[in-house]
Image (cartoon, rainbow, N blue to C red; front, side, top):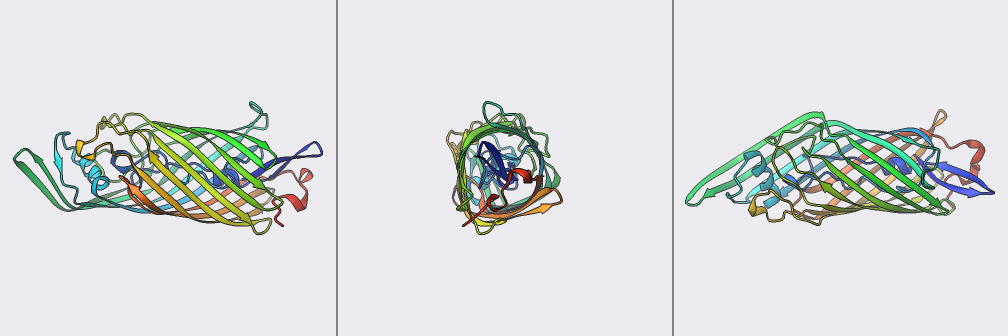
Length: 356
């Protein structure tokens, strides 16, 4: 990870980066979140502190261990049962259900940052792949009826899957103006991961998606103060297996940090996620099934040399609230990255990421 470029005496100084890893994209699937069956393409928390700061050119690699544990009641739980039961659209459904889901994933994110400017900014391209385990169980009572006929299901069902997930390419373009940094990004979902519409737990979402947006980072290395926010929209394509199409989603991720030394910082992270258009192809009892969730939590980070490269560790966690039509709970991210070190000949020792 590398921090922002700054101009001094006509020379472009590259600071050690943590922005790329902290802004690392990821996409989770059926263990956790919403839209069709409570699962969205966008994983809140994909961006955080220093998201818009330009990077040191060259290859970097980020690895993330991601854990989540969530639950849902009512329509968010019933939607999962409707999916795996393949109930006709005219069915009546009792929403007395409880869904629990967990996921443990490892995400790999190789990225290449170009040295040649594009539109006056810095271009980077990368792709994210994941491997891990997702598990879910559903318990309670489901009553379905066609006119005078009714069927009741009671008890518990559950399953799990250990496999690979979808692929998530991403392109970013970043600009720096002193302590102000700006970015735009485009990303999406290539649905090649483990997915079965008749299974409670999956590692793919079963359909493609595109997502784009922009962000801003304020970073003052002398004072050690930083704040970042990134917002975007997701367009979901129709799931060919279920003929279900999730609505358009809006999301904001943010992070704030304070450097306590040249290598160590603490701060807060958060996100807000809101679906802004209705789903189509859903059971009528679910209505528009627009999902929402808000999350906030702490973060800590540490920078250290790895030979002639730069290493970075970050731990952040989110507690979720204000959820609607979406499982909610908590999640943690443990990130390790390795990336090119800023050239020592162009970095003054007292201003690499200096605090007062």
